[in-house]
Image 1 (spheres, rainbow, N blue to C red):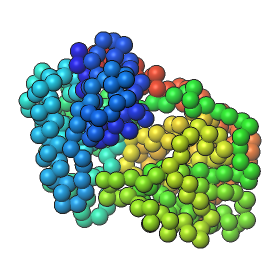
Image 2 (image 1 turned 90 degrees about the horizontal axis):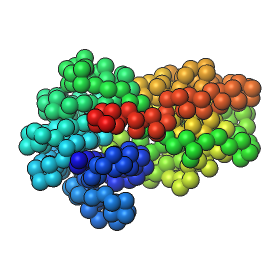
Image 3 (image 1 turned 120 degrees about the horizontal axis):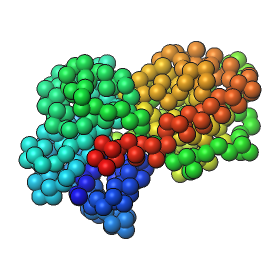
Image 4 (image 1 turned 90 degrees about the vertical axis):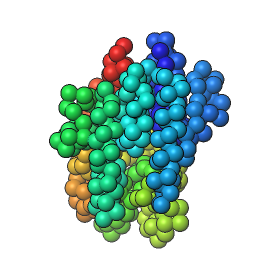
Length: 371
């Protein structure tokens, strides 16, 4: 059985989809990966996987031409490879693959919607125009899938209520899973003074400006704490923050930007509290699943995806979107109550063990494949 994964980047495969591919390989599947640069990825060959190149994504005016090139490239790959299952992991590549799927009638298409992103979260006129134009194509594309999996119930409700997908074809699988051995509690490495950590890609809607405001509020209240943003720049997103913009945002603030961290478990171990003030339309933020697995109390927004990773008043606190004052109050409350924080930390780990294990996600996805 040939199983084809279609992704935006090979890094996405290595960071979150390798356990799924290995499980499918154990079942006898021949694993293929289509992504920009995948044909030259030597590590894929070491695992016995096959790589296929796709054109690079683009922003601006050339985005339309890049999309057309991708549709034809995927169509050619589906026609030549004839995979038994083709699985995509973003709304964008589900759209492109669905439009290319007319030549693959014998292929079972599985689309994972890992968040609705800029297309549905943008409040500017540009995003509204793009959604208006893309809507009929997206509806056609998503209906080519035998199964559409969602990472949170809000996204599922939006797309089913608007008839983009049929409810009978949907499955809820919460995230891509987290390795509970790699991400586990460590009790002897916490920072002093307390370290408040925001792990995120540099995207405006992840709430970085709110985080900087929280740090300033707590500094004025004379609450002893350090504040760090850990994450690198990202491309091909209209909401991305450039390196220069980020440097200007943190300049003169009480926040340190440390860039992309190579050892996230070690960084979580140093953190006293995870604060994630996002209003970005993600499926379920992977960093929150990792933080929960590491046994960290979490403060995040009462927003689709984010609220799926936290039980309010049990594993952390949910706060209103774009409200720095209330978020600062929540940080202060937890810092001043060590007993409450310890209780939340234990509950976070227990939640991760129940709901967010990569083994559970792999099992659920393998059932979608038919195993």
